[in-house]
Amino acid sequence: MWALHAKRQEIAAHVALELGLGDFSTLSAADRAVVDQQTDEAIEGCGTDTPEPSDCSDADRTMRRLLSEHRALKEGKAGEANVPLAKEGEVSAPRDDA
Figure (tube, rainbow, N blue to C red):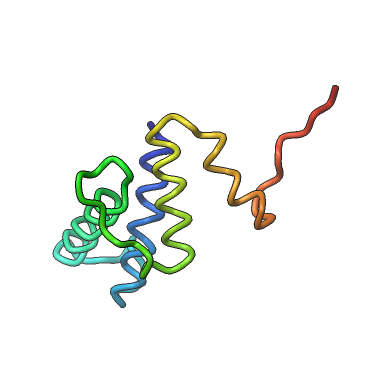
């Protein structure tokens, strides 16, 4: 669950930047509440399990990646969450030492 929480925090930080509020860690309580609500809406609205998923095509590449990784973690597919990162060279793929 920690990984899921950490991914949500990444999404919230990105939302804060998109809203022009700056660094998430320095937000006022009111701004943090706005960011938290927007974060929840982004996560819920762009999920595949929602009855009426939002059109998330307007989300930038980073947000789409973060939401995809969050969804994979939520579905218990933690290994899949690293696939886009590995393709971008941000993490190394597991080695096969056999």
